[in-house]
Image (cartoon, rainbow, N blue to C red):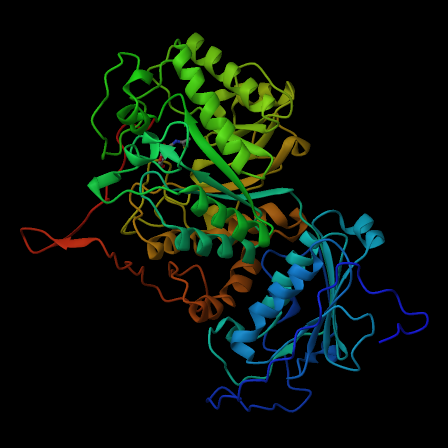
Amino acid sequence: MPPTPGAPAPCPDARPDPAVPTPRPAVETSEGPAHPAPGTRAEARLTEVVPAPERVEPAPEQDFLLPEDAVVRVGCGAGARDVADHLADLLRPATGYPLPVTETATAASHGEIALTLDADAGDELGPQGYRLRVSTDGVRLTAGTATGLFHGVQTLRQLLPAAIESPTPVAAAWVLPGGTIVDRPRFAYRGAMLDVARHFFGVPDVLRVVDHLARYKINHLHLHLTDDQGWRIAVDTWPRLATVGGAGAVGGGPGGYYTSDDYRLILDHAARRHVTVVPEIDLPGHTNAALTAYPQLAPDRVGPPPYTGTEVGFSYVDPTSEQTYAFVTDVLREVAAASPGPYLHIGGDEAFKVPADAYAHFVERVQRIVADLGKTVVGWHQIAPTDHVDGRIVQWWGTDGNDPTTADAVRRGARLVLSPADRAYLDMKYAPDTPIGHDWAGLIDLHRAYDWDPGTHLTGVPESAVLGVEAPLWTESVTTRTEIEFMLFPRLPAIAELAWSPRATHDWSGFRHRLATHLPRWDRAGITYHRGTELPGSTTATVPTPRTEAQPDAQGEVTHSGANTDQTSMS
Ligand code: TNX
């Protein structure tokens, strides 16, 4: 077909428009007519989005009914087509609509969702922001980058009725509330950590966690890949790390590890969701699993037995041995080469048995190894007193906002990721009767997870030094996907809002009411969550989650492999 005069040239890398699949037959349910009359009111409101957007301008007379023959139209630009495909993939199952993705330049006569990359808009919206306009004609999503478009798509999803989360077709009026949202994050780094070392979680579980993060605009997944109980990533040059060091888990349950193909699957899934994976190799402590595989790394050169308990701080690789540095260099080189993200987390926490000077020497040398690999060092805040390398990131996990050593590291140039254990640790119990989790940093209900300010949390650290916020989930007592979700929801969205939304939007009452509208979405999506009185509409009961590993014990009670009491060794 000759180009239309005056029309922009098609994108250089345009894919041919796919044949439009036939719509699936509309499903009759009690939820509404298959062909709702135009003008049906939107179920969701523009003001219910979590995390709260920077600016929201409702225009209720501009509600948009997504027609059955709607198209997703996408303009040129790196990654935009993938975001459009992702959007169509999200909307097809519940709507049953074909939603073809097209790169044609001409707007459809009605009912399209248009995604546009626009460098000028990017100047205003920044590298992660977006503008979303819903009017009776359709949806216009604009951003300076594909990442911005992706975040806008997550907002768009929340504007559709909760039934959009259904994995099978639902006959509903797919009406979006009219108006404009202009949005961009307060902090560039929003993260969650999954400890796959204490208990191992297979690739499908990790992919599902990535989906949960993306939904709430969390853009980093920190994988705690190694600890005393298990080494979870294959390393070609030191193969026994995974095959021997990966064999066990807390409580003696089955272990496991990611092959390089597994790891690539996680990275690819994350990349398509604009989530950066931050791999952690915890050094020099938390290394019992490595020592079982390679006793020559141990200070006494004796391999310890596998560890299935939950104490911390007893193991370490010999910081005075050149073999240790050869090991560290090989491992970090392989992990760095496999990981496209800019960060490499070196742990550094709770090496209680390593003398301070040997610890500092070790961390400084390992930091240089990471820098030489072209990656940015991240470490738990125990690395704060050591010498600085350019751009390093200190992850603060304390419970007392007055930490002069970390504040001093910031003055020397470190940036900060905040994970206050008494606010952001998702392994803490919600309430005394929460069936899993710890309480050494206190109980963390939704209000406690929400009600703090990352910009002022640490004395002497200006907001400009705060790269962002991360919520870690340690898994000593977490054994299944259901239990992961039970600890994540509803606290993860609270942390997401703290890290994304402008401080001016912070409002506990508003937040809990907005988040309550997400419960039917989680129900539809099959997401397990902790029910409590804090979310209107949630029941008062704390629902214990089913555990697949549960075994009846001698008394006929149910016990759980991997369940542990609180750590006695935590300060
Ligand atoms: C502290 S936070 C740890 C972990 C435990 C966690 C349990 C940090 C860097 N270390 O080894 O799993 O507490 O809450």
